[in-house]
Figure (cartoon, rainbow, N blue to C red):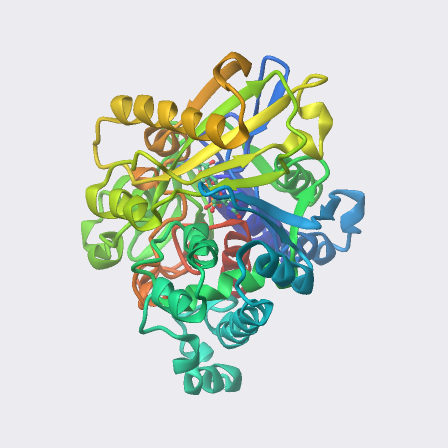
Length: 488
Ligand code: FAD
């Protein structure tokens, strides 16, 4: 039996383990932390449960697919519900919007609340669908680094339709030319942050993202986000995958251009195939540090995606006005992104994302209470004075939420913990604490991401948010699919 070693039990590492086990490999997964999931993990805080990282679940079919592949019924492991309202939006001028999943209802809501014609919204979403239909086979579902991909008829057809994906102007420019109302422009610009990018720099191709949310929908796993990790680990274990926790890998053993296994805890573990789910920058700089000639410097030096600052607050009250996902927009979006990307600090009026899983999973908080996951986008870690930035951001966020909700928040916060770019980096080995690998701030980003297979070391593969096709749960699951597709 062929042996595969996977470095890291992030969502892509777990999915790759399942796929290789189904292919007949004996799979061992080595994870530095004492738990699986990497960014997709959970914790408990004085009677409140929190999902630590991802909170928005899209494209559940990629999770279901793994159970189906193993001949199991997904519903026996993992259940979820579709959201009728994807997110609630609050603007500083008092405007409130509910982003309904139903396209017509959503377009009408925009028209009612902002005066922007519903037809403009429908047209924008149709454009978003077209971008998806051109890009999904080429950029997302296949390796961009194999000739075979380019010889396929659907790839060739997509290449001819390339101008239609709008790669040469920025997302903001495209949105500002499509909508008159600046609140609606801001609404659609926000989708750039779904992969940690800047709408004032990123190509309008990223306008594909609303299609994923509005066509395929947004979902909530009944057991919370962490149930994605738990159910997939259960499946992997049933397939014979072995997980080793608190097991930090120190080196990928390469001899004569071939990956022979890994070195951890002072011992070598031999394998036919090595898959790193560790961030690509650290994979080279820590695990392949003895082989500097193998390092693809240009790829590794690409701009990183933004990071996040999160306050996890136990709140001793319930807010019927709020939903599972809520956004409190900055009054000046352009200034906010200038601070994140050019000044590398935090704007005094940031856009605040508030997720409350206890809305749909009441046992995540004590009776009459709510678990607040309060997040803002921040720059990747470049050695800023985070203590000062965090203190200021906390004050500004509390003032903003208190103002927009008409409630004095501080007495309601009964417990707190904080995640910032430094702790994201140290807990999951994500270079600079960026949460989606490299940014998509230029039109070539998709081609510049590291491939899923080493071109120099036989038997070495890569999966996860820092390599092709990119960050976020759905793309990480696709990276696992591509990796297992190129392994024989
Ligand atoms: P990671 O989660 O990065 O895990 C890598 C694993 O490798 C870790 O467990 C680490 O400990 C392990 N490892 C590293 N080095 C070693 C070593 N030397 N030896 C052994 N093990 C090692 N995505 C969404 O789809 N929706 C969202 O709403 C969303 N929100 C997010 C919010 C936050 C705050 C964050 C941080 C991320 C968010 N994401 C979201 C992105 C998503 O979480 C990630 O893209 C995805 O979880 C990354 O998975 P991964 O497979 O790349 O591995």
